[in-house]
Length: 146
Length: 224
Image (cartoon, rainbow over all chains, first blue to last red; front, side, top):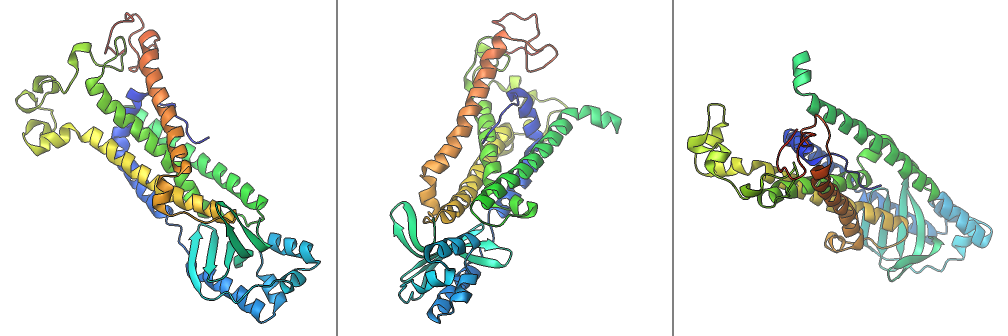
């Protein structure tokens, strides 16, 4: 799946000699493409907003920021998404230490929480919150997660 | 126009099938990416978003780097190594950089020789190695792009799976990076090696990549 090489060496050598300019230009396009326009401020802002709503007990608002799968999982845990968030015992999360954005996924590391997010048409949505690291294994999240 | 098309048929043919294959890769890659997005409960992405994604960039660059490495090694290995009976090899007694007379440089250049083949010094040295150097440069650039885009695509996947992202130096020694790299390299080396050996015993009438059909199996460096 990763690679198919069917050209014969001598033939392609001649082709590639002529095509080096085109290939170089293509590489520049690729270099630009892989930058992936990180939107770290927006992701961190959405994670902060989620925690601010939780602290303000605006559970409906916080649920609205959850991605559909995370919402469904929370509802399955406690009967309704809001009830699952109400049962959460998250400490004050503190300041944002790090934000990682790669493509359409992000994580925001607070002093006492890690929030995972994914982009949707409406902007960043929370896919996991109340997450703690488990070595090389996926984080364990109280809301959403695996 | 017709003459130009005829004289450049090989370049045009490969240029066109390259573009078609790249378009096909982009379209099927977007479909596959979206299948995975849906499975993870995430939104689909547009064609424009996919072709500017790290996922597409790494899939393209990992193939490019291995192709250019293949030709880089082939260009340099065939200076010093020969294969008896193969049209891909030069004659057995011609190993090495050969004489100025063989290479038509300096005083042995002719009226149609490129200007830098006629002069001495750095320009001749550079021109004498320009094919290998260019292949090497494109290989290194493609491999570098693979490492950057691969790191980004890998981290996107990590975050999607609720795992921590890794930094670029860590990615450079990761199984993911080397597996992507080596699975491409092994197939390139096999393809070149097969061509060298199969062309000793097999023929393709009319192709300059083959010996003439009636050539002896131990004829080396002849093309048909």
